[in-house]
Amino acid sequence: MLQRKSSEPDPAPIDPKAVATTLELFEQVLPPIQLRVRRAHLQSLAERIVKMADPAEGWGLSAMAAESWHAGLIDPQKPLAMASLVVLLIRLTGHMHLELAEVEREVAGHVEAYARAAGEEGKRKRLEAMIDATARSRKRAREDRRALDRFLDLDALRERFDQRRDLILVAIELAIMAVGPAVAKAMEAAGRSRRAQADVADLLGQAEPIRYILEQLSLLRRWPTRLAALESLERILDSLGMPTPILRDDESGHRRESLPMHAEVCDSLGAIGRDRNDHEWVQAKAIVCLRRVDAGLARELMTNRLGLEGEVPDPWPKRDFLVRRLVIAELCRRAKETPDLELLLR
Image (cartoon, rainbow, N blue to C red):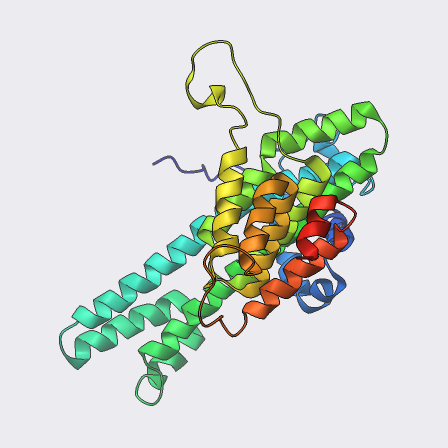
């Protein structure tokens, strides 16, 4: 394995101006309650973004903005600043999922080793290994070892891994929550300039934000994060619409398919909108997003969820009225369109 020579310089410290500018971008796209309650999480997220925004790599940064991002000199009002933030958040989310998987593998390994340990001495050694993996200092590790004789046990040590896991999940949720509004802000900042719109659309297109959201929906189980993903998807669809299908003259695989992402998006949103085991707000938001992709399929699903056609559950789930209420609210917003008005009046 190659190692860095001792003569090589240490990594450059994080520029506080760059972090402050990144936080300013977050302030434009996140709800005020998130900015207040999760300020420490956002600080950490901003620092990670600045580390990742290395101009030498060029990830998500145009030639004109690469140097200024890392130096903290970006004008937060420029459309490419927001578009670059989207790309970096998408990339960072992938890294955080790897970290989450590593934490889960680590705790599973500790629990399995504890279960297989023979005798009290063997189990204590496994608990000490968990202490070494989670204690913040040697002093704290010594105190934890003494606590094994009193109250510290496997469940208490597992909670420390749960805390690490929760920190990663909160960071992922904030990143997902910011992507949709950042896409909208980038397009809004581009204004009527065709060149600016083309630059932003090209940068965002390379990041594939819609596919990113679909991947998050398949990976995440916590309903608040899934709802945040769908809310971001709604903003992305409103700002960018569905990507233009790529058609080729040669006979080269799936790229010749008409509307390659259309079926994937409809299948994913339709499955969530029909899943009564998912949270009611998540179900309803999936239907709202489907309405922006395929109005006909969305109306069919709305008709079914309102109990007007198809199989009707008997009895209705206790909280299903929340889905019906939100579906009706969406129909009211679209009442100027004849098919939606007719469905509303049935």
